[in-house]
Image (cartoon, rainbow, N blue to C red):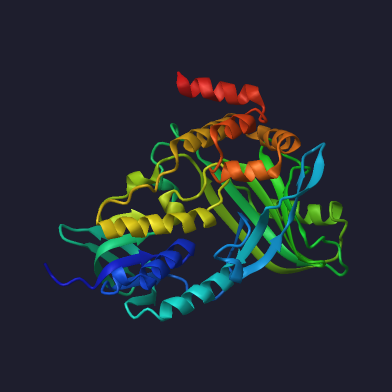
Length: 382
């Protein structure tokens, strides 16, 4: 067999790709492995933000752009501010993350980064060929973070809800934000037959991210997101003059499809493409940080990646939730309002982190509207 150009190729320098490259680079087990990290983008701009809740201190605290100790939840007839200790809600800016991890990766002599667009990945009898618009590389194994919806083959069996959003970072002429209080979900906006809410993260008293988010099957014209943000700023925040500092938009798949079925011994999907987004929430960042050590451990064992699947019990809970939203997308605000009215956010976070015991899960589930979930349960059962 011809000599390989690299042992491993990592496609995509997002959270999953950079965390994996760093994990391999700092582990002496892989010091003789040659690794290529390739991305079409140089990662020199703040193209996204990652948010997560966490108890106490964490490994990304040095990169935090902001941290909140309180959250606000609002329904159509209910609004409350919650202290969330021992949790806090944290935010990392994409650019800060990229700068930090690219600096680390520069110190690993066995890792090379190339800014190129991957056009094809082909498995041959002895290796994998990764083609870009400029070059062609051979390797032993590929870790691919590119996601596209065609990766989910049976959408009837596993409903696919898209979490899609557009956000503006705005600066207001006067202080209007509580800097220690993040608006986690505000369902007071018109639902229009979907699950729609506003998400507000204040960075300063006069600077905040205001984001319009939907859990639904279909995307909207961009003008509709922006019109909703404008209306919210003017009529909910009572601010008719502001400057837009940054814009962001995104789309995260919410599905219980087992993405590990797309893996084999030579190509492993990672990040969102690997199914590392929590199906019921779309949160991916912390889940990715938990999956990377498992993936690295499996590489050392020279076996198929294992233990990367979601816990079966929580997978089923997420499946029922997505079934409910798929059959009646307008019910989302009622589910979340019922939960936040009757259960503390600490329990909600713990449940969504898949760290609860069975009795806590029963208590959590009893806080949800019962009829739609019972219908979804019996439909799945029979």
